[in-house]
Amino acid sequence: MEKKIDPTFISNFKHTLENCPYDLNRRYLYNADDLYLGISKGPMCYYDALVYSHYIAQGKQASTPYEQAARSIHDYAIQQLMLRFASLYPKEKMIGVMGGHQLLRTDAMFRQIVFLSKTLTEHGFVMVTGGGPGAMEATHLGAWLAGRSEQDVNDVLTALSAYPSFKDSKWLLSALDIMREYPQEKLPYQERLRYRYESLAIPTWLYGHEPSTPFATHIAKFFDNSIREDAVLTLPFGGIIYTPGSAGTLQEIFQDAVQNHYLSFDISSPMIFLGKDFWMREVPVYPLLEDLMARGKYRNLKLSITDNSEDIIRSLTETINP
Image (cartoon, rainbow, N blue to C red):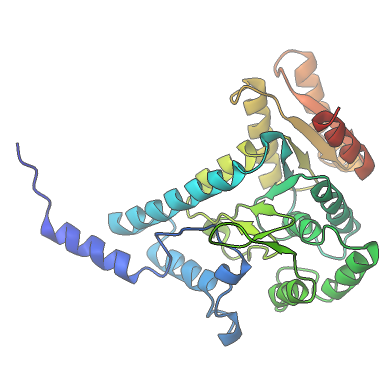
């Protein structure tokens, strides 16, 4: 039986594709230059803001099948590019960092994450986060500053401390200023430049009111948060470092625990908790996981907890290079 496509459907879909502000046929993952193209024209004139405004106007669940299809085409392209990027590195070199988006640039934990990420990046690891502010920004800032001196890092943290929260009007602009003042070493690679030290951010327009950190050299930004959450937890085969956070971080902990329990990807990746007081007393997830392990409710979990970044660096480097 011959199938006929309604010409109205084709016309509406074509109209949607022609008028959506995002690129459906991307050849590369985003970076700061892509997401913040046009920022000099005003706070809502750059690519990322325009896409977010369109996303809200069309509805988070997409008001038409044409818009939903367009978003799906975009996300499929980003997913394939993300997997291609990840394939450039050994799986065990991918390290995730999860933590609160409210963490201020002036907080001692922010500084600790920056130096931890910097050192791990210098050891050849690729840092992966959800790409937002707070602990996520600290991770990519550390990766961006890999290879630089401690004094450089201190100078950068001092400069950024003037705008501690992502809610500050110059939070994003201050980050872009730092990137210009402390540029990354670029390496030629096929048609597009790559960097001496790279990191991967995986944000989503679902939380588009929080700007994506520009410090990540590669940004896989999705419309569909479920794809994003899955990627954030499955790509870091080398392990995930959990820094203090709230509901989102807790969700990620237990989702990660399920994957490790069932060996969903044939391995159990380390679950490393940074901040003993927070994870043992304030939000006592760690004792709960230990108890569930002891009673056989969870299996295969590789748990550790510490306040010391050196413990994490030593553990991960010894695991990769015994």
